[in-house]
Length: 312
Image (cartoon, rainbow, N blue to C red):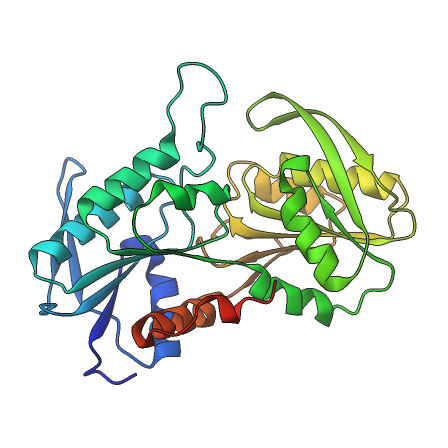
């Protein structure tokens, strides 16, 4: 794409590493933006170049802390007030997505609140990937392009050339996602049934299916504290699995997650780079989603099909 193209890409502070890769793939420069921080923690956003009449793509994952979301909201508001033709939020990791319903009395629905905030701020379109719950797309009254990490992961799994391959899910809630992989790769599906004492704490887990002498790949959308996925890996090794690997789209990896993965029976843990990962673990590998998002941006601008680039 040339510098005279009718769109510009800008980035929030903590997603700049990904925005630069996307711009390299598109062949366009990353837009110039200034974010000023005040002593009390408040910050202000300003575009250092004209965006009047431009299609503006704002790259920012809304992972904790909440400054990333607030920064994106200010970027949207500033673009709207600077007469951008359209504002497209590129949110590889959509935070608060686990709060998609009232699972007990007197709780918030955080995902809907975030959708409202983005809509009121003024976005015209959302590009995201592997939402924790597909129904979050319905929280928006604008086009939502929901990309899938499988476009990156399926070729990687095939490149491993594993015999006696089994696809597994660490909890029943992810069975639909894992089943899609199993059908595409034409291999068996194994489920894990877990019960929780409270959030981020697994009480018990049972395997539903046969993993003896199998090479198992666990599929999930995100890994937070890694308690569930490492427990699943350990149980599968105890049940006779030859090897256990894990693939998850979003590398949240909070608190003791890196240590748990390192000390687990996992051969490797593969993520995308939707979230920056600094607490390095030797078993963790990240695959870039930059080319996929760049291609999606190009197709949005040329009014081409987005879904035709999905593998499964």
